[in-house]
Amino acid sequence: MSTRQTYTVAAMYKFASLPDFEALQAPLQSICRDNGVMGTILLAKEGLNGTIAGPEQGVRAAISYIQSDARFDGMSLKYSYADEMPFHRMKVRLKREIVTLGKPIADPNKQVGTYVKPEDWNDLISDPDVILVDTRNEYEVAIGTFQGAEDPKTASFREFPDWVEALKKRASEGGKPKVAMFCTGGIRCEKASSYMKAEGFDDVYHLEGGILKYLENVPQEESLWEGECFVFDQRVSVEHGLKPGSYDMCHACRRPISEEEKEAPEYQRGVSCPHCYDALSPEQKARFASRQKQIDLAKARNEQHLGAKYEKPVQLTE
Image (tube, rainbow, N blue to C red; front, side, top):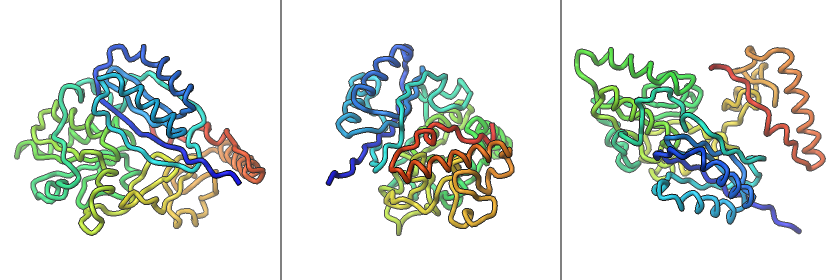
């Protein structure tokens, strides 16, 4: 009787000056391919960001290769494990930014806010003079956030500067306030804090390691976190201790959906949910229904339907 393979998943990022980032693409693609590793890695002048998965030995080899470049010393690296391979191809992509803000003045290689360890986070955000801001997108905030956090209501990170402008207007009379920000794993906050520093905010803090490190390190009885944390993998959401949460995912729009939302008439497994039902054309719904039927047939034959992995989600917002 064969044992089921467990795959190692590594999420990583590092802001670093990479003027030669284009030259890194081909060797990195090769080292991953040769070690049976799949996933996506983004390379830009400002650094590296990605998630890969594969046999543990292969993932370790790819990480070792990346870290052999001294510019990736101190790279943020988080490991998890999956019973199914979450990716079915390897892509090393060249980008303008590894997390897209669209503001060149935001350069984490030059300046960032003050890192705050999870163990010290509660004291900071309990200060009534601190403005606590969730830098994630609105659909992520909807399923969980810190007590008292302000939601910028962004559909994409490119909208975050609009919130900063609004905050500057609110604070015009009393001076720029102390700001504490957080995101899922830390990368977005490094970019956001760099932008706010460039915009003249002096007291800017961000949660080191993000929400995930907080939920991993801070006991639930001491936690100021409410709800669950959306994650961009097969778990969909996690709770304290990084235990898998209660949410499922709509495979049309990739938004988290609750068991209650799955009871709504707009929900059809693999086809639509209350978030995207009105945004889908009849042709899209028919295509997704056909795709789901093929997935179910493949599963019944104990086969993997690769098309499900490659289908792009519906874009509800730009």
